[in-house]
Length: 363
Image (cartoon, rainbow, N blue to C red; front, top):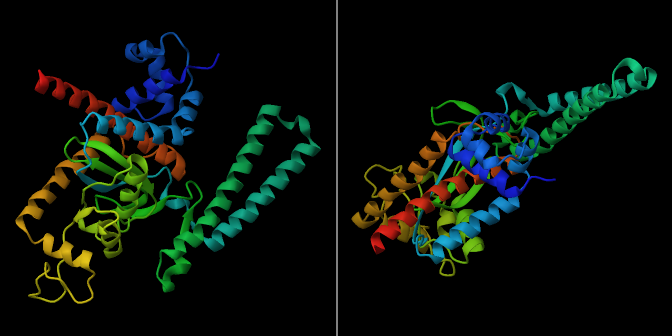
């Protein structure tokens, strides 16, 4: 009989809270640890099933995030009045040496095709050279290598689009995780990574929006997050608190439009001209951008903006402490699934705390 999805859901939620991020480790805990054995309730699991369940149901996890936050909205525990957004670079499951330029990838593709043909010829000439299981494993490995190289080649134009005209020939893609990008990390080093975006309600510290992109910068990520809230909950945040890396004029104009109605709180960059007031409207500024500059020069705006660090950075730190330091899966869809697990686990703990607080206040 198939395993009840509720068991697998409970196992991964508990494992995520417990800082367990490996299906093999979780499989071992289900045999050796009393808490995980209790969750299994005598049902046997294996790491293949656990790994597949964790990453194959992105739509379900996304819908659960929407439904759970909507419930908290209905209960008045989340308001979306003020939302803080921040990006977190998380190490990808790819090494720096796996990145290749287009000419090298073309050579690798030819070699992979030749390897597949040689393997096919070898098996046809001497079928008894290895077992059927060994044959299938060798064929699968050769096919997967060819597919990874093809995906890496498909990513090259996307990488080139983000580079300057004189640097397009330096575009590289990974043959291990083609959708990973080399990014500047928090310690100042450069490593293959994915950019995880969390949006958090400041009053409750509940994660209300999740996205994963392979852009090394947060520029341009605010407007999609506001739109995501509209799609999820039928309303947008009243205020968005972001750092200066998000302050793209086009995004400020988009989310500040009357039909959207979100107020942006983000630091204004220092002017290039010495002595120029950064909070004064500049020639060419749109009405929304000019209003943002003036607003950020007020004490009330500075006080509101202080909530960003205590919310967004706190949530990021909790995720790091629960093991969100390196992804063990590859590809944006699977990476996004893991990010959603962290959001659901975080919100589960926040819902318990908020519920207890509400009981104490009413009691």
